[in-house]
Image (cartoon, protein in one colour):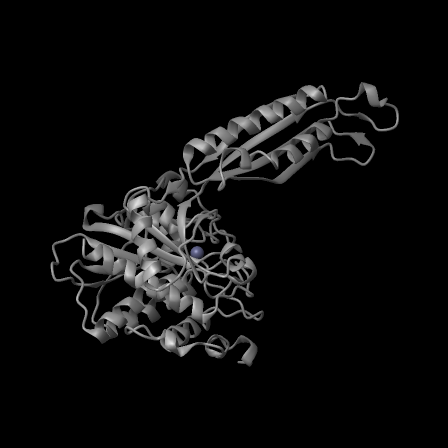
Length: 432
Ligand SMILES: [Zn+2]
């Protein structure tokens, strides 16, 4: 392996070893990130561990080996989610659960997911080393198929655990090799039946926390290693169609046109200023557009486009959707076309409770890190769990915000500071 792709060498270079204290060991974290990176390593130095693949399974086995060395009791549910449990002084109390995923997008990075799993495991390493016994049971979780690259879905393991599954939809999924969901499950020793049985009694869990790379630039811009996630935005998709009249580009005078694309163009550029009118965390994007008939010398008779609208609060997101719809109507009136719209997806956003953010803020202060809050625009397992249980999320600084790419990078210094904050947070809620 050339040094360029030697993750351990790259991580340890420039590591400030004074950050290894209280039993948290940066060298061990770097070695483990490196070991995982070798599973599904691509020619570009990226990570290829699609959900429910042999590679994802192999990465889980590696973590299970480390869990065994820590004497954790290991269970695997019917969706392939892995839990490593350390008993607390009072084993009958609901557990604190911390973790993330090990699957990746095709040719993705080495931090998205594995950092959360390894950080959660590092807490137990630290506790064993310093003789700390938590009051509550503590579980490290590895969720299956978070990215959803196999079936163009996602958050599969966490949905199975919470029972948020539409089995009819699940059954209809087919991967790019033509394998059905049942066939894919069978190949790794699971089944549709076992998947349904994975729903867990959520009363056994007191709260969930996930640490993850930011996949954005906000922390880098503020030069902060770690940030508090204020909420996880749920996407809402709005399909808008502009109906005009197709006509000859040469023979139709400008005053007699019903050009659907001119209206759509005005609409798209006006959307840009709307999210800021409802909240700081709202965003809206038009990323998909179809023009009919799509000919060089034909006035566009119809445009169908999709708006992706997100915010961490449902009320402001609904407000934004209304503003966008009235903007579409305004643009249609101005250019004499007709518009129709329908919502095609609506995922409930999860704002983080203020009590939890207060605990996270204190954990940051303990490590002299300025506590800043930032929304998560992307979905995570915490989005699913947060609908059912008190949930916290921390972000670690990402270099240039690059993610889902072999160039994804977070420095070991930042990762280790994240583990310290996670540990202080978990210990503070454990004492409650
Ligand atoms: Zn992730």
